[in-house]
Length: 158
Image: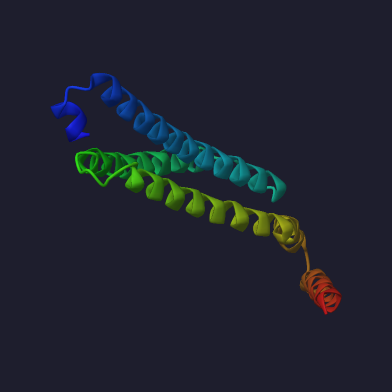
């Protein structure tokens, strides 16, 4: 980039900056999309498991995106400094940071998918049955049913 400035080749400099800006914007867009997909996955999992959607989860997503933006700003600063070096051709650090965010969010989506496929959604109903049991005998019957279900599911896996 410095040689473009020194030779006053402003058309080439403009093209150089435009290409790198487009790459950075694409990376930032991917970061936001990854966060939104994780948010969607998390809310979908919470609904499937019968959990309440509370504002704490929404705030956590916003906080996480803010943390990612701060990291991406540092990556951008490093790339801007690197662009002054002749061998630094593309914004490598921004690309690497974006890949890291996409991997982190991808793992979270996978974890949500695993949670959704479990029978964790049955737990609130089981707890209600235990609480509403009026005698110890009813409580034991409910626990016996749970054990039978667990044994049946364990046998299905093998």
